[in-house]
Each structure stands twice: as C-alpha cells, then as structure tokens.
Length: 301
Image (cartoon, rainbow, N blue to C red):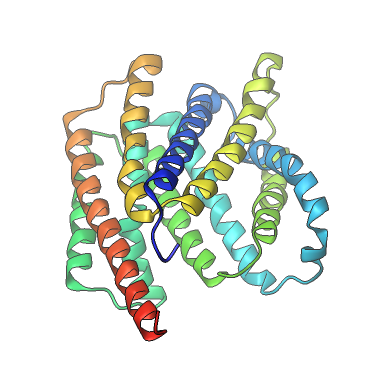
C-alpha cells in the first residue's frame, strides 16, 4: 500500500491484529497449561498436522500453482528453522513465565538487524545498531540470573528467537513465492520434519486433552490468517506499536490463570525492548514512506 492505508482500513487492520494476538494467546496458554506433560516435538507435530488438514481445501483449489516450485532447498531450510523455533518456543512457554517468554519474543526485530547485516550484508545505520544494542540490554536485564534461572527452558527460548529470526531472513529470500506454496511447505514440512522425533518419543495423550491440543493448531492457523489480513489492510507503522499489546495480554493471562506476577526485571527489560523495537519499526516505516514518495516522483506521478 504505497499510498498508505486509510483510517478505516487501519482500524480494520487493528481489529484483525487484535484477533491474531487473542488467538495466539489462547494457543500459548494451552501449551503453557499442558505442555510440560508432553514432548515439545509432539506438540509441534500435532499443531502442524492440524494446520495442514485445515488448509487442504485451499491447496486443492490452488493446486495448479504447486506444479512448479522454485528453490525447494531454501523452502526446506526455512521449515527446518521454523521447526527449531516452534519446538524451542513450545518447550520454553511450558516452563517459563508467560510475560517473560513474550518479552524474549520481542527481541526478534533487534536480532534481525544484526543477522541481516551479517548474513545479507544489508547496510545498517548507526541509530539502528544503537537501537539493537539497547534491545539486547533489555533482554539481558529480563534474563538476568537473579530473575530467571538459566535452565534448558531459557536456552530453548533463546534458540527459538535465533531460529525464528533466521526463518524471517530466509522468507525474505523467497519474496514473490505464492502464499499457497509458502503455507504448504510451512505446515506440511513442519509435520514431516517433526513426525519422526514426535512418534519415536510419543507420550500417550489423555482423552480430555485431545480437544485442547488440537485447538492449538486451529488457533495458530486462524491467527496466521488474521495476521496476514491485518498486514494486507494496514500500515506497518500503525500495526507495529499495536503489537505491543500482546505483552500486556500475556502478562494478564499469566497473572489471572497461572498466578504469575511479572518481576521488576521483566517489566524493565520489556520496557527497554519495546522502546528499541518501536524505534526500529518507526525507522522502517519512515524509510518505506520516503522510498515510496521518491518512486512516485520519479515515475512522474
């Protein structure tokens, strides 16, 4: 949307984004409540398999697009990174406070700056490096040993951030790929990659848990649709700050349903990370607007 979204479109986009956050919180809450009793690979497999079943009708309608798939190796690499990110994330959310887990997730834009410079050789301004450094300081404060014990769950959360950010970079390299192809590799690929570790270490599922574990896949798939709709309709500069509401939502859910009270370190760290990622979002949106104006002027519009 080079011309910028209208106020009405941004409002609709905001509602879609709120729906995305709500659905994700429900999915994460289920993993938080039940995840400690099941291997993370098994949870990811069930989530991916459920999502794949849900998109089968769409795949059937768009099967002509699947006849020719470019760069399959890059798609598989993206799926492998996503598998690590989801598995690490599911393990972490089952063993860490919700507010802390969401705070760590918000470091992805900060990590993206560093990885984009190192891997893609993108030019990064001094102000963006400063914002990235500030965000990492916030992460260190939130993850200080006096606040969160250095357990496998914390390492899993860090692995999820790194792998998830890597998946974003690979997705950039696949720009222009039809959405149906991206979804096929993501859901179908995740199910295939996680099938072997999930089935070999399968933990029998309590009958009462099946509806909730399957709901994780339903909520996650619906959330992805809401996220895509939000960013199709609205401006990134409007949606970026709104996304920080998920920190408040996760903190509220953690307190109300799991009796978790965010520590001072988590709150301070989250505030610093929000400030850093907010600045990065603002700079990215401003750069995009400037480029759009220049392109418009160059075309004689």
